[in-house]
Length: 106
Image 1 (cartoon, rainbow, N blue to C red):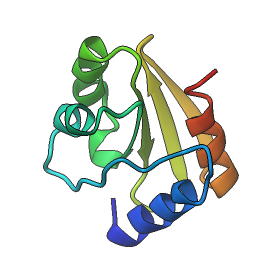
Image 2 (cartoon, one colour; image 1 turned 60 degrees about the horizontal axis):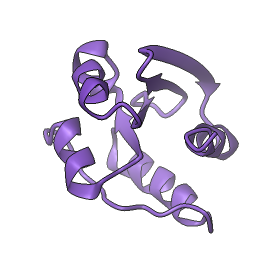
Image 3 (cartoon, rainbow, N blue to C red; image 1 turned 120 degrees about the vertical axis):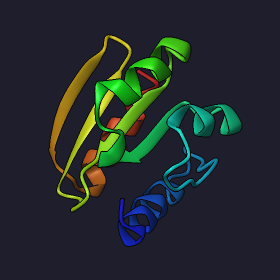
Image 4 (cartoon, rainbow, N blue to C red; image 1 turned 135 degrees about the vertical axis):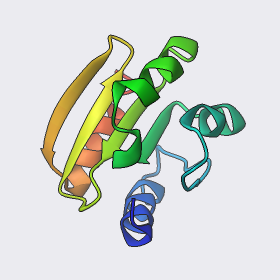
């Protein structure tokens, strides 16, 4: 994910009173290592982690974690859950990102 896009997403999340950013990692750090080191409930990742081969093993080991994969151009995102299930979120906006993140608690 481009640095600028990462910073925009981080700022959107950091502005929310009910959310905390617990880490910021760049590839090639494996998703699992990021989740374990930060005890994260939700991970926002770039398109390089958008496939079941990357997300599946993570969700098997950490079934409560949700993974939001944002395409490189920042226009689309997908939400991964243990089911395994990929939920198309459509065009990315601050509201779409926050709705997906808050859905973790539901």
